[in-house]
Image 1 (tube, rainbow, N blue to C red):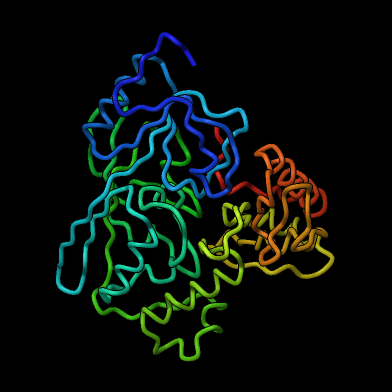
Image 2: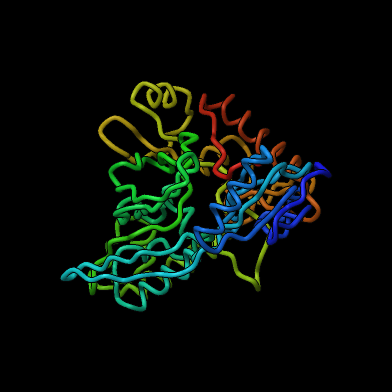
Length: 349
């Protein structure tokens, strides 16, 4: 840390990030601050620019691997709170601040009888992170629900609304993730259906529901929570193992790549149509078909006993341990199937 830098009020020095991430690995932030409003954000960004400090944005830390050496610059914990609701006939528009817990919002919408995000229950993280990753699960994606995203432009120091059509959403991707846009998510507006039916598209969820055509939103949410818990993909304070949920994304292949992949498979691989020219392959199937097993250990890192997509920190693992384990899995899957698994968590710095 530059000893000549005197941080402004509210900025802390050398703050451990391990306890602020669900993987519980990594070093300290050089500088750290909680951001509770746009005015504070503008002030902190101005200070970081004066000091030529890189800036990193943190929500609940559920999708981040922090380097053991720590993170240089300023880590901003986006803690903005609040929500506004507007009704238009049967439609409900709910505008939610970036720092609100995602699962709190899902639970709230379900209790209100607003359909649309019930299948996204149990996903850790904050509202502000959902458009960046285009979060999805059990047949729903947030891009289907988002009408606009309020963003702060670092270059102009101004905020504005970005319509959903301009966010360039795709599978686990968006404008915010693809490019260094300098846009910070402040709030997200979602469109839900008041007293609408639950849409059950995902086969596993259909099988878990006794009457999938007549279930309530509450029943769907509870079933999704149970499915996620059985896979170790739901953070439960009474049954918690440090992880980042899915550590790898499901590969999406075009027609040519999928044909080449099928030729390498000794047995028929499961796949799902994404659109007319792309198919998705379950990463968990690839990992297990490559010879890795649930519960397999790599020193202090283990593949979850409940789901092959999840890497867990057994005790005292470092970020280097996690990334070495991930690389071993990636290399073997690629050698056998010609497909390189991509990491789902962001790696800092």
